Length: 284
Image 1 (cartoon, rainbow, N blue to C red):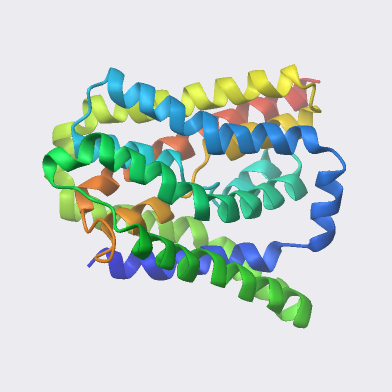
Image 2: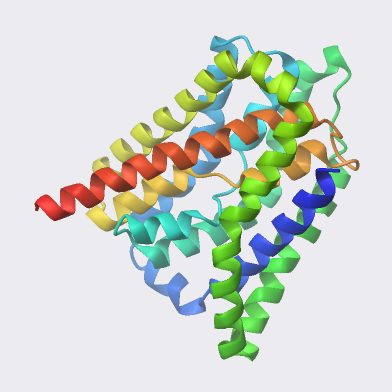
């Protein structure tokens, strides 16, 4: 049942991302490549590496091991744009990063997940149909973004109105998805919430700390640093859930549990982060 909820939600979120894209934003960001490079390195390379280390350290069962790697190698979440705005970050950078990471991970997710399933999945009968993964990502990730971008330029007023509506629906839809998964798998979630919840929270905190330090090393501005922190810390949980539970790929709802817990914890941690930086701004 849950997969028929997550697939439309993911499609709507990616369509909304396309609606908010502006080609001119890419030009602005590429003129200051430092924040872009740091954020993409954090998302594409650093986060999966941290997830691998934590999954090994906490000795997660294979299905959760693969699930943690999966959420770590997904692109930035669409809600990061809202969080970046609330934190006084660079919204144009946030939107551009979400779009670029969504495109790059079309190619990196199959590579990383093939490696992860070869590493721990074969012993428990988990394998990855790479062709199906690529087809699903192209259909549910790339196509809606392209359609949203076309609508943005073909019908700007309608696109803006649709964007406002979908922007308000994004978080409630994600909560609906989490609720459905919890109802279906509450026993498994409660049985593993201790070690898995700690592991997921550690992943978010370490990723935020590392991305902040990297941003300072390359001397990004304050607004850009806040956006980098949010982009690296907020992954597209809907995509991870769609890949884990899809009958065409893993068909394993338990594999989606790390993404469910990640979605909950990333919103809590990043809301705290937003509150702290807004308090800092008021004090200043």
